[in-house]
Length: 138
Image (cartoon, rainbow, N blue to C red; front, top):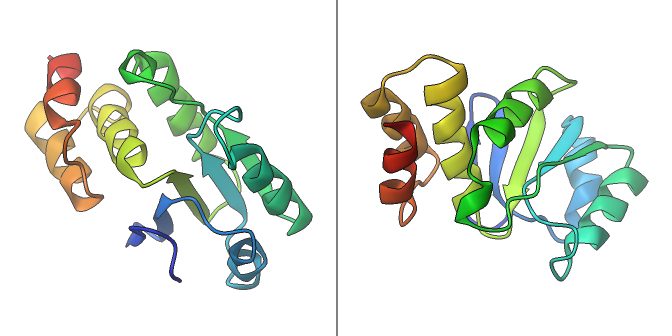
């Protein structure tokens, strides 16, 4: 699927936000739930929610507005959401917030060491947010 910066990670599709026409294809391919890390006030984010629901997909929103949104509460919300009906499409605008929050979930919720969590993040494209995430995990 040509979602921006998309990769398959542990059976899930993670990356940027799908286009309006891709939500139906996501459903056809067997994905069950969309987890969006975009604030619904961001341009195009609320349309993504509508498109997901129209395609018959569950929709979970964990809004990450800025670096202050990278917190334990949101990492726990991601961990809880992943207990729902999968497989999942997990996105933000480009994929960076997804990789960062997964890294925090790995450290705070899954008990991985900082280095193991960072390694997980790199598998999903953790880049410019690494220093911020490293500080939070200490």
